[in-house]
Length: 99
Image (cartoon, rainbow, N blue to C red; front, top):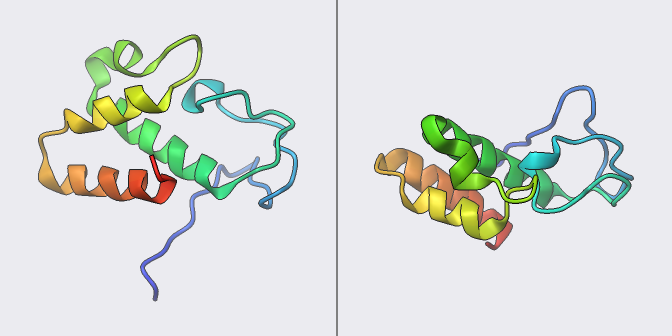
């Protein structure tokens, strides 16, 4: 086992490079429909999902801007995490994204 794992949205998982036909728009930085799929999109959406979970009470204020989650807001939300193990996980995800 290499320690790598894969994240996919069951029901709409597609191959890298294929045209995205569906996505949760607010989880992304930009509109992804009809764009070539990239693995980093899944990593980004994982980071957004974890950040939203950590900030349940005010996730919309922390993450959303014009219907999407820009990277600077995701990074800021991650920097507020106090639990070291979760912070380490989130930083690993952001590192894979090169954010």
